Image (cartoon, rainbow, N blue to C red; front, side):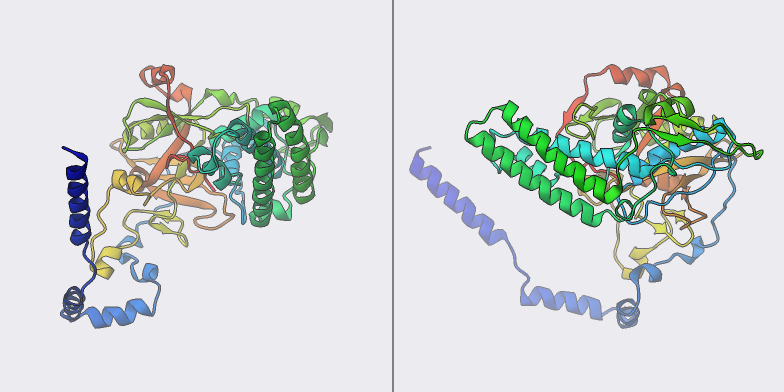
Length: 461
């Protein structure tokens, strides 16, 4: 085929595509109107739906009496935390996994870690990670996919389990009384906006330095000065983290422990001492091959930390690991698409809570694989999985999640049916001692590296 023939064929194909595109015509619109008006209940429904909350009207009354608050197996824990108006659910969730360890070890009535302490270092480390990413891509154009991703996502207050591991391993942990929550820890919106603005400005400056031939050593020297400004913003907003502190505790029998001096690292070693590298992240993502190890680039909280790695497994296998952990009194990090079919007032997650299809006369029929592929569903919130209700025949009836929204829901918890777990659970972190040898072998695979803009890179807010 010569160039002229190819051009004619290409223009013909373009003309066909343009002709094939159909606008909403008068006739088409008329058919829609007639179809709507031919239904005698349309007017009554229009009056009701247009004047009320769609969600309230879609409540499935048959489901209202089905909430059972009893569980056959529950992890021993005390108290409920509150992340307030912040995206730190991942941090609260991870620390709530460790909280029962301290409570049971010390025989105390309650305990809470300082989320503000680790959040300070989370934001400092993420700032360094962003600027290192800018330095590494300084030779690429601004419209390069990775460069654009960095400037679109310089920092946030969301995260996931791997970030908690990175932070605790380096900085330890402290009680909430040692570094209490500040206003800006509980209300992160403005702090996050200012950090993003400053980091984008820093990124442009570092790229400009590279463009005129400055070496990496000069860029990193300037980066250190920039990090000093970030530290100042964080210290003013959150308070300065303690290098050491005095602490003692009151036991359940009323006796008081000795007042001692700790560093955050020595405190973690003495009172928690959980080996965080023993935990494995599982994902249920039916859009990808099961029994494979995946890794997401730049999905970490420290430059020298670990990218998030996860094993993708069928949902029923993940449930078995979760049940084994609860039966052994160990809570787990759990993340899900919490907004789907959530009855917030009752604290109830059930796929039958709301019937939008019957109300609106249309069918909503996507399965989990289709919802993920079309961005209709993804991990949106992290909570702590603390209980399972097992029927006499061994089947699972429901689960219980400890939330970080204060006393909202069912006494600060969410009751989750097993069917909802199947449809909307995404990530679960389980100690390897509850995982079979065959599954553990998957960790020896070379992970399939996914780009940072992959849909699964969704930090829990």
